Image 1 (cartoon, rainbow, N blue to C red):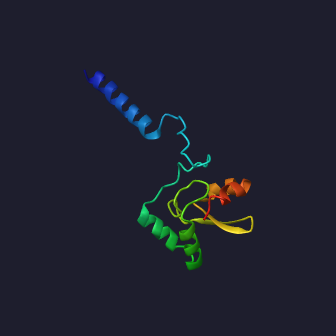
Image 2: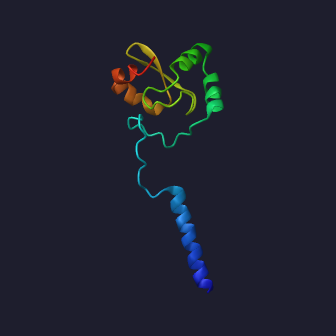
Length: 116
């Protein structure tokens, strides 16, 4: 009887570990993310976004607030930390994180047309 309880307990622990870590299957790409992997990024709520935008200079904060979203992912600027300012095609553009920079620079026109 003790052995049976031990085996069941072990199975529960193993199942919980797989559930917490995932089964190794990559998560499907979110619409609008263009393949940028942001699984390791924490997405903040509105108060977190405001705190992150407040870390920018007043000029940059105003520009980021006007832009509102990352052109690569569509995520709100500030939802994954302080937005990153990038120069592309003679224009300053904010992105949600450094992970979006390569996509933006590879196909700038694709993403610039999404901006206000």
